[in-house]
Image (cartoon, rainbow, N blue to C red; front, side, top):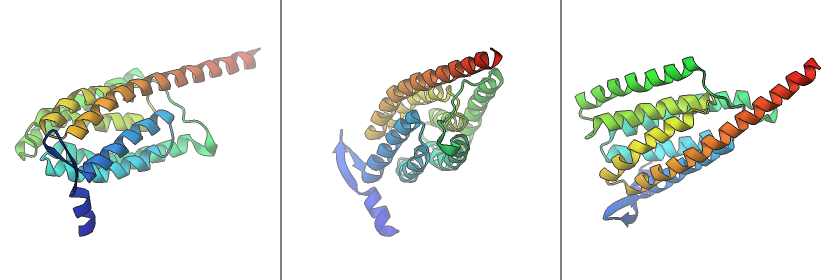
Length: 218
């Protein structure tokens, strides 16, 4: 185990005067791959995400970003749930059915985001686990809500990620995690692409159901 930790914390290169470790480099590569795989709606989204979680957890603990580090643990748990949900939705090799959230689901997700951020920020401040508790908490809770919505195959999960990325870029940059900041920026673009793709898939599926209904009624 010690050799693995030594390798993960070893310097890969220096960027803008800051050391970039192998764990940060490969962990963020896994994170980028996760978003691309999610756009493709493949079950491989989840095991790749789990790999990145393990690596980035160590990186964020060293950067004294307790909320973001805890987020990786949360990701691991929710990834298991999402893996199970997607496996059920893709039985027999079927394409993953995606849909828009209902009004109740949107209100529930918004409530979780606002209430969870306030509670998490208070915890981080109390335990001095982060130098920037509110943005750190927002990223943590927003990521949890987005991953939960992703597990439900809700199209809106892409917009939640966009909001998280908008805060994640400056926070990571101010923490000296330049690779992570750059990855957040790429996430922003990929999330817009993902939203467009999932929305088109949902519209096409709705059109097929309408045609089937009309054919059955004829």
